[in-house]
Every structure is written in C-alpha cells, then in structure tokens.
Length: 394
Image (tube, rainbow, N blue to C red; front, side, top):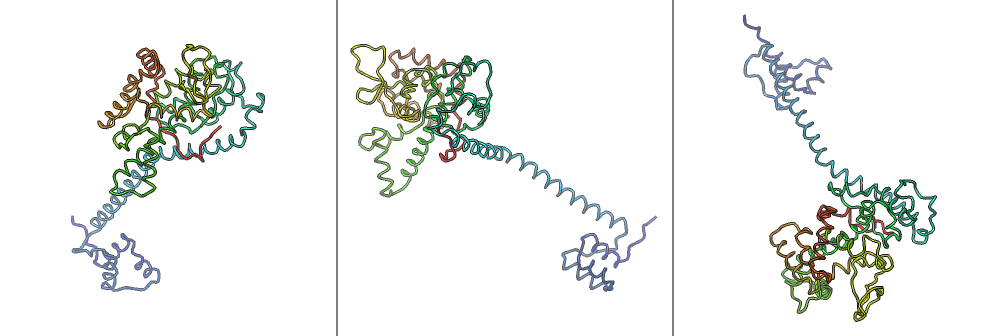
C-alpha cells in the first residue's frame, strides 16, 4: 500500500522547520500567510534545495534522520578533536604549572634565606622532614634537603623526563658527609651540581648557535666581529681558525661532569671543595689556590680556588675545551656531531686519561661511577627554564 503524498506547500514548510529558517518562524508567529513562491524564495535565499518531487512523510523522515546523523557525526568529531588536543597540550600545561609553582617557592626562599640570614637560621625553625638518617645532619645540609623537598626537586622525576629545577648553590653544605645513607648523600650532591653543569652547557650551546648563525651570513656587523674575536681568545684559538673554534665550542656530557665532580671532590666532602669550591681539583701555579696537605716536594702547584661553585664548573669545561691534553676528546665529540648522533658520557669518557696521573685507571673509575649511578640518564636533561630572574641562587 503506497503512502499518501505530502502536499508541495507542506513539503516546503517541513524543509523550513528542518533547516530552522528564522524568516519562516517569524512569519509563522505573525500569522502572516505566505504564498508558495514566497516560501520558495526564502528557502533559496537560505541555500536550501527545493524538492524535485513530491515527498511523502517517510521520505521527509529520512531527510530528518540523515541530517541528525550528520549533526551527531560533527559533534562526535569535535569532541574527539577536543580530547586529543587536551591530551597533546597536557605536558605543556604540566610544565607551565611546574614552572609557576617553582617560581613561587623560589621567591619565598629568596626572601627567607638571604645571605646574611642563611647562617642565622636556627635548626628548630626549619620545616620538619627528618628521618633517622638525618639525626646528626647540621644546619647547612638540612636547609638544602628542605629546599629540595619544598621545590619537589627529585632525580626520579628527572630520569622520567622532567626538566631540572634551576637551583644554584654558591657553596656545598659543609656537613654533607654526615648524611648516613650513601644513596641519599650521592643524590643530594647530584642535585646540587647538575643545574650548574646544565647552565654552563646551555651557555656554550647558545654561543655555538650564535657562531653558526654568524658563519652563515655573507657579511658580519662590527658587533659580531668583536664577539668572534672574544670567542677566539676564550677558547685559545690561534690565527682565528674557525674550524678549531667549532671543534672546541661544545658541551661536556652531563654524566661526565657529574662523575668527575664526584671523583675529584669525594662527592662534595673534600677540603678543596668545601674551602675553595674546587670541585674538579684543577691545579694552578700562579693563581689563588689551596695548598695540598700531601704532595711531592718537587711539585709547586696548588688546587685552584673559586669564589663560587658555578665558577668551578665553568673553569672545568673551559679546561676540557681548550687544553691540548683533551684534543682527542674534542675530536671524538666532533665526529659524533658530524654523524648527527647524541653526545653521551660513556662514548667520550675513555678519552679523558690525561686528566689524572693514573691515566687508564682514572677512566675506569669514571666509567664505574657513571654506570653504578646511572648518570647517563642525565645526558639529555635540560633546565626547567634558563631565565635567571626565575631561578634560585643561594
């Protein structure tokens, strides 16, 4: 049995309702009757195709259903896109939130722990996060441990890809060795030196990027020429040899820098590190230094002294990047760069045999420190942000 055909005028009105044409609604409310031609004209103005044949109720229902399906599909696609965008920006949101939290806590510490107040803080006024390992820890170390806890600065998160908090300590805590737990003592030392290392590497990379930009230009400004002359001097490059400058101006893997700081300073407990911020045991014959208690009478050297830990790290990196004894280290690093491979400590540490008199045994010790403490995990680590105004220097 065939369905009854819907009158043409009713079809037009149904299409108007289906596409929600406001003009037809307005005329319907005003109870003004429109002719078929007028309704057709309104529909055409709204880009609605007029029925080519008489539709029955079933056909109009099908049109409504199809329109609803299309609408649902569009809504679903929008929701899926929205969810995907939320997932994709979640790491960014998390990073920004972490930076905001760090900035807030850092400001609190800057106001509460100024240099003149740092030594005056009484132990019973410190926040309590003590356990049995901390029973005999002095005030300097306790302040450092509380600082790291309040900033939520932990190595586990960094190993999982979180950026490193830009906390720069000027000196090592004097009683770091009193932390009973070896792992906790080592972790604390790593947290202290890693931001300093990453900061210096970041400066080197900024200079390296600037160097390549300058070299990519057909002509350079006077300021760029002056900048180049200073870099030639900084890296002891004779004859303004660009190839040599590119070879020398590069980072020291974080794992190597941490391992050598640990070895040379006894994980932050040596007299040279505590008295002179000398974390890398660099020798001097004419600079300000500390006299070693045990040395050959024929040797006239001292251990180079620094005003702060950051200066020690900077001098150490400059030493590896300029001294002729580490040319093989720099050449191998350059080869890795040319192959577009990632620079890591275990690939390069074997070329540092000239750093100590024990040579190959020294290299074995450094490899052991890197492997036992999984320091290679930090070779790709980056600072949370490089803006010094948002960092914390104590």
